[in-house]
Image (tube, rainbow over all chains, first blue to last red; front, side, top):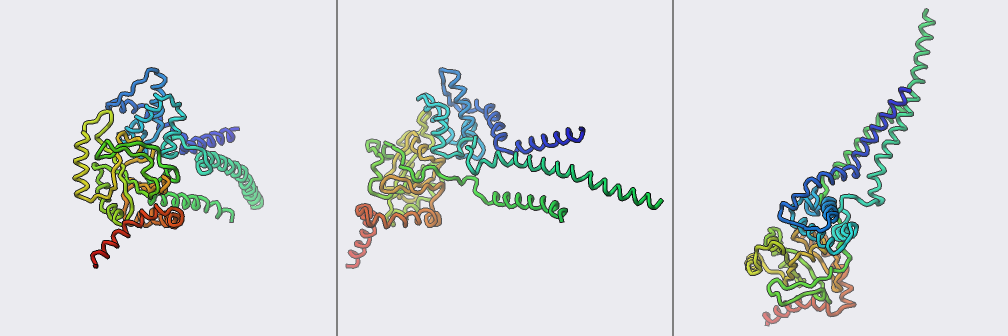
Length: 170
Length: 218
């Protein structure tokens, strides 16, 4: 019983470790980090006024999730690059024109590729981001199960042989 | 025997990881596929940089192969590539500037258009002027539609207004040979057979220069 629970804990730990390396987790971190920084855009003298507080939330979310194509690891909310300024303005314009969140993202993707959005699309190449950690966890689980089974048998035989030898020596 | 495979497994995994990371050392983090290639040049209607009464639209591409060079006077690399662009112009290629300015923010602009023009004239007289004309992307909307991340960037647009090449960074001999020349070589035979006018444009400066030589000889 104890062995099984220990094993479950091990597997759980591995799974956590594996998922933490995947892009999904990295993206979550990035978004929350960016939401904290988002007011920087307002500090830069860009006051984007929304009548509806929900629209403002969407704007903050979009600028946090869209990646600056010029700078390597900043979203357009935190970046001071000219392209980020222009993209923020475009997001605002598109929203005023009534574009939905998805439409704004598609607009940017059409121009700057999948790179521009922090959530990668599932393609034959990117599927490994999700599949690999899970696959790894399963393989490791298999390895543990095989080793658990094999180890005691070996020990028993060795012990038996040792015991028999002792008995004979006696 | 089984033991050895178990010992080898981490080694193989490590080697695989090492090769993967080693590749990363020499890959360009800024390299990414352009989404503009093989699409029509985005619709635009923009004024001339030097004279706002002249307006350009997509008809500037009609029947001619054009190099669109995105640039600005504030951009150092753009100034560095000007001499090479001028040499392309002298070879008979049509180079058109898509100009945008940094300080001339449509909402918080502090730089006047007169000042921009003075700076453009002085830069072009200093480093060379390859441009047939300059389109002024006032609000930088066309640059955004093109997927421009920063100057300089160069687009090769065919006579139907379709983008064939999108190059980020400066244009030089090596880039021209590897990225632009093969595409041009591909479409050139097509022009010769199908579009006489377009080939006439490409050929005419060369023809013009040779006739000048002839004239000088006589």
